[in-house]
Length: 408
Image 1: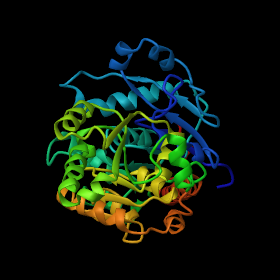
Image 2: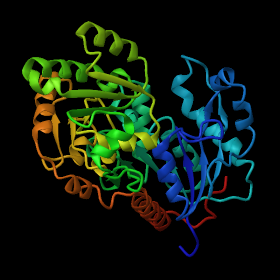
Image 3: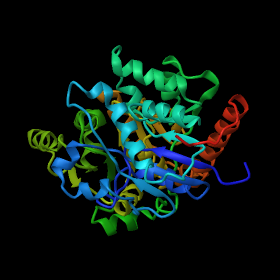
């Protein structure tokens, strides 16, 4: 191809002028991709959003310049609540078509959907009308949360079967995509990237002083939303189990919880019931810069999730020279081995407690932990994705009759 690739992105979660913090991993990947090719991003908004926030009407009617180097639209998609959820893919596709009408002379070579359903099936419809291939990025809950049967599963499978390629962020998701009928030769694993410059192995004692944490003792860090799927109850059970298993270690260990969510009130009650006020510190929502310092200050990152795609906190912790204890879910087994962490059975709090004790007692080589994620930048990630897009376009062109691409 003698000109830059033209890629239309259908995003399920993406930054906007109102919420520039949304979709940080989509943002970084597509932001870096836009340096390699021409990108137009579509982040369709469900219509109830307009009822909750009147400012959203302003997003719906114009391109959003929140990110440099690409055009972004947030068209509204309409559907019938409850009864119409099975047809949300049609609403997404129609919303994208309306937005594309604002650029009648634009053409695209390929479509990338950042979520399997409804965005993947909407991409299939649009790609068929344009005469271009489409790819689907499988990130986690889009495939992990599928019911055993029913319309959503069937429509997700339909989207995966038609995709030129499925880009999965973990081997586990790649296996699920294959089981659902994705083309065996078209399923690729591409784990998330990392901003290594932002997440560095700072001096641990200095980071603790800056954060107001004790310079002695052990610090275990949890970073994530306080949701049931994140396993905060498993972590609390494991931390309490440490008190019974090794009182001396427990006495010198503090658990730092960075995040907000509906489980916070439960955590507060559990702290009171167990008398953990001096051992557990709730930090609330923490900005990205402080997270990097917390990871350098911590002796260990704990990830007890019941479900994950590619947990960036693992990459970020390793980049800061901090080992990880994680449940065997999502990409965690792809990212960790005995040189940089410990993997345990999901929802097994006793095993998680034993793994934390083992990790806290081990002298880890922080430089070696950081080397584990060398080369996994978002720039390298976008380059790999760009090559997949180019390959899909070339293979599609070899199979399809010549036509002007990307035009309705």
